[in-house]
Length: 142
Image (tube, rainbow, N blue to C red; front, side, top):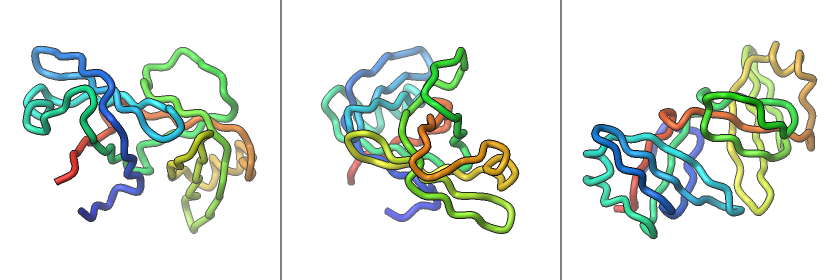
């Protein structure tokens, strides 16, 4: 499968919290990290998502916010992955920030050049990738 999503992360479903309309799916990914996705109840059934099932998460790089450090502020973003900056690729308007996580795995975030400069981002700097559970699209191997 080819997609325009910059981030495709493989994992194993660990929990399914059922709801009347939406379900909360917890996916364990590389390094023992966890993602939380909110999808419709119908999608959970169609994809046969249950604990132990293989699944993958798609997250657009533009949906990921970058926070300096590893603090846990009070935010509504359910996904908070702590890592370090592995690569910075500046473009004409935006910068791609690739974040590496302990135990393996990376995510790419797209932020404005101005934000990158204001935050004085550098390679090996500790950062946290933040994104909403509703920003994740889940899929299963065909």
